[in-house]
Length: 191
Image (tube, rainbow, N blue to C red; front, side, top):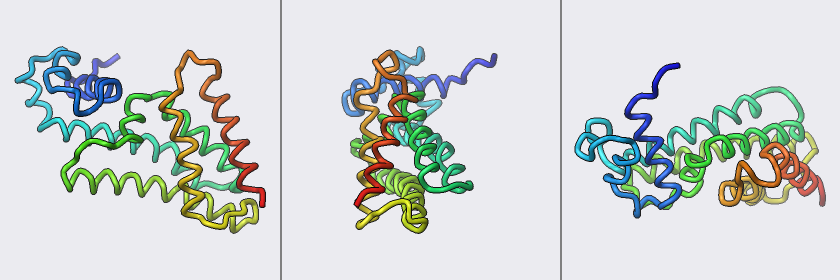
């Protein structure tokens, strides 16, 4: 098995620290120490702390998008896609809790460029969910008065998982996803 690169060790260390201590409370020295490198040599692998944060957000966005896009773009009725989408979303959170929490809780003081990039990544992912809800409305499966608000509500429901999910908790990620998708389907189908 190939050994992860030093940069991936640094990203992993930063993801853990940003998600547990917070972006502002984490120092470059903390990251270097956790990654097992000297503080000065950290800059051979990264430009600055914000770039490291942005890379973690990019990786998480890619994981979420790669999990959801094939479902949204694939065949099947919206209600079945909703079940698979919720399971895919929950799986990404459960398997990469640190990165998911950083992606979902983007409160760092980014530069304008960083903030714009993060917003673009979020909007692209949210648009996939919007397409799913629109398909459900078109098929007569979902009753939605305000599509924008419905998309925000669905995402708020599934995104909250990173705050309280624990791998050793009472329910597995798949069990939680099954509950979430049942509740969402019921709510979207009712008048």
